[in-house]
Length: 390
Image 1 (cartoon, rainbow, N blue to C red):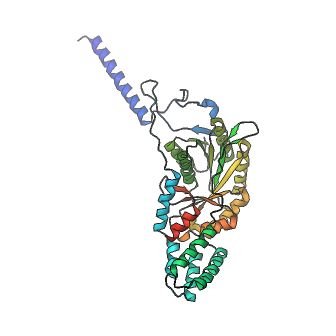
Image 2: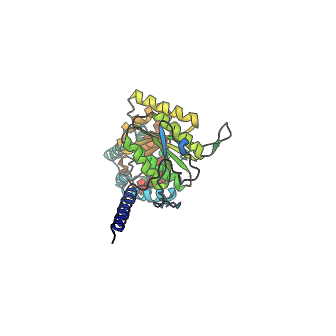
């Protein structure tokens, strides 16, 4: 074979090897689209969707590696329906019904002495029902026991259920305020929801789970990652959004102004004609006045794009009375409209539902009873009490 032919073969072989290396590298990076390449998403905002403070993230759908126009669409998760969730979580709640079991055990003893009544009272207080509601409930139980006779545990159980349902209050409006609204400019506004709370309550996870609830109800959602002081929070929220095809507006740099990111999220929600904009915020202690003032600023700035329809406070149910104090301060700063109780699996602290609603006059709207992606459900007052007493 001639030297020239050998040289040509060698060059071709080298080019093939280089090409394979490039393709492999692109696959390893998830085949991300170049910045100047047209997005595969319909109605893409392009460069206009990026500001100096925030960027819009969509789930990466990928593209054909060899230059074809075909787009590879991944299978998105379909979240569990809210109604099914509550039935499943109620069964879990019933299996660990420490509060109800403890009281029913005492009531079933028949003739009740003073020590028995003290045991019931102590159980209620340890469950964080609160002194006021506990005193009211104890007075009613003692009176009914005299009327009905202490030898009829079933009748006393019915009284206990009736009074607990009253204390949990099924008449409170627990619906999420996301009905469509047209602004003064004649354009539809997304329902904007601000999610707040102290460190460690699970706010970011709750925002991700709530997005799944809304997607399961066929609502379009935009997420705002306004926790700009913890890079992992924005990454975590992006992961939640990608699983169900929800767009996320996040900061380009750590420590950016969270109010600006929240405003951009609302703007994108309006441009997208989204049904709901959910904004996550950084955790903050209720005794840090500067951070609480910042929360008020976030709400005000969000309101310039669309009225803030809900402010959800995420509380860890296991913190008890400390959580009640947190709720009071947050409510004063941002007018909390609803509560989300996380870590309600251990129902020994389930009484916080009664205490916090009584103190704030604000309903528990969602509860978290597990670590699964769909372990967040709309709160059902009567179902909650029945689970405690089952």
